Image: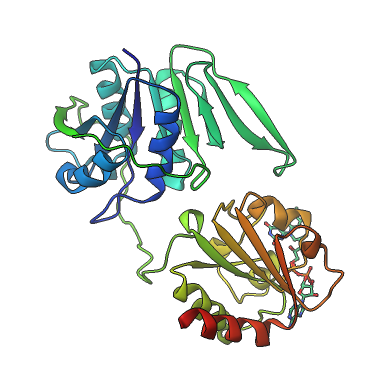
Length: 316
Ligand SMILES: Cc1cc2nc3c(=O)[nH]c(=O)nc-3n(C[C@H](O)[C@H](O)[C@H](O)COP(=O)(O)OP(=O)(O)OC[C@H]3O[C@@H](n4cnc5c(N)ncnc54)[C@H](O)[C@@H]3O)c2cc1C
């Protein structure tokens, strides 16, 4: 029987919605069963969501006396122990900061190859598709070896519901406690804002968005759509926005359903970070701006007029 385990990421009280596309990707491979690997979260809390997206077994991975989420090497060990216990050789997760960290540790401990930032996976053919050269080309990679490990870019696969009963199984891993280091503090983004790399809607500002007040205008527009605010490198370099919201080659790669580029010219470095957005809307005062040749909908106008009008209209 073929099985794919999916590494489930959670917030304090819910399953991150970006997991649902990963579960759909796993299911689309024609695999017999999907296992949801949950560490450091209440499996019962995850049950309804995981049952909705095709998880047959929720494996709640714990190690007595150890907070696995604080000890990523031990967490990787515990996940490997679960893979081996259930005889599973395929593990997919989100290509998020957390996913990249933990999957890399798992791959290193197993001596297995790992593909991150994948757009799709073919478990039977042992291949994945992923972008290279700032998104200019999409490569198909074959993963050789005993394990099939990959991280999928958030929002690259449309979630499709597939109802199951999702049985919860508790797995106690014996991983010891001799980890070299542990996470002592996690500084949470307490703004309650949507994470950029998982957002369905992003309203991003470029050079003319040049103050906190200007960003506030974008925040208001994004909030109406439960979206997040992004930025090109210029406002970040000029100190108006944090690097954590920079989109592009040296910032975040994002993949929302809707990307609204506000006063962004469309340099290749910026485009590399948002080109896979499902729908791109550009608002620009220059009708010859390159972004207007790369978007689905272009609005030629001043962002300081268009965005408040858009926000007011959406608020209705
Ligand atoms: C190695 C390297 C890595 C880089 N990495 C990144 C990266 O990760 N992300 C990134 O974004 N950039 C990156 N850059 C920088 C990139 O080359 C561009 O300089 C940058 O993206 C330009 O940002 P911008 O579009 O906001 O500014 P500009 O190119 O200056 O464009 C501003 C746009 O706003 C329009 N505009 C002005 N006023 C208004 C208004 N009131 N209303 C409507 N439109 C208006 C203008 O017509 C113009 O099109 C990188 C560069 C290098 C060399």
